[in-house]
Each structure stands twice: as C-alpha cells, then as structure tokens.
Length: 92
Image (cartoon, rainbow, N blue to C red; front, side, top):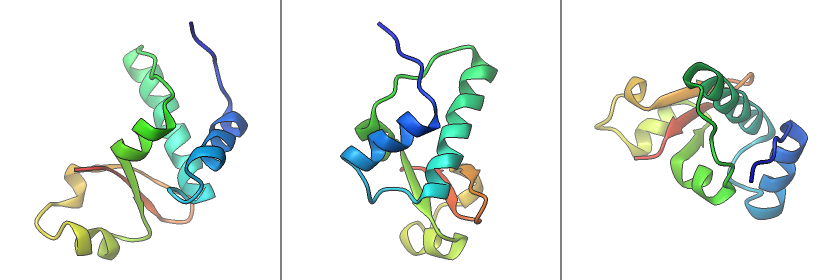
C-alpha cells in the first residue's frame, strides 16, 4: 500500500514523532532531496520518520560537522543544504 505525501504531511509527521531532529529549513531541504532522488532513480522511498532520523543529520555549518567527524570529508557525506545554509548529511 502506498500514500503520496506533500511537505505539510512530511513536516507534521516529524513534528509528531521527532520534533527536534531538523529545523523547518532542514526538513524542507530533506523533503526536496528525497523527492529529487525518487525522480532521478525512479524508485519510491518509504516514508519512515525514525529511519530518516537515523539516516540523515542536520548541521548548522561545516565547522559543527567537523566537531563530530573531523576525520571524514564532508563532501563524501553531504546530501543537500537548506536555504539558510544548514547541511543535511548522511549519518555515519
């Protein structure tokens, strides 16, 4: 069974289950990234808030990222950036 969601549904699900994982701008960037990924690969992504919180992390800046992962180049893990400049990276 499948359900198509819009950004409002996406944001509401995060607010209900994990309200502190991403900023509004981070959620918008992640949503657009996932939509683009579906379009470019032709594969649908299962919407699972908990799994997405395990797979992606938002950082305010590259400096903040490097505090956690000084040995990893951000370019290897960067998924997308938000309009305010925060970074959405793959968790590792």
